Length: 107
Image (tube, rainbow, N blue to C red; front, side, top):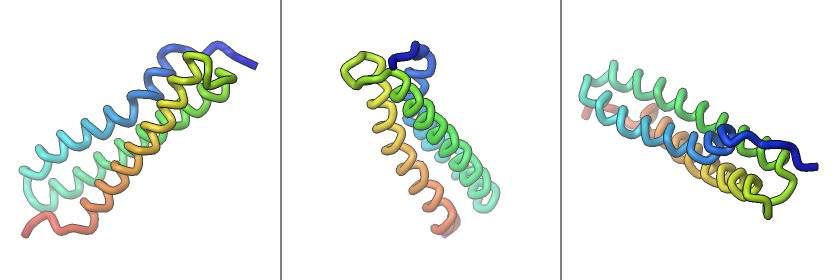
């Protein structure tokens, strides 16, 4: 039951969560310099948005994996890699958001 899987969805599933994490990390450094409360609120909002992008990438990769039919197919292998990277980077994003909400930004 192999359906056609778009190349765009495969690449988003594979690279969406790592790119969202990278943007969140780099923008977090810039937001930390803005000040205590404003930077913290913006950092949490950015982290939540990046986490949602990562979850979306994981769901996209999961759908592509089911549609590919087999891990042995190139699309299935790429989709499975997208699932694994999405899980890893979503966990990192959740830890970053938890850190931004728990640890005081001004010491």
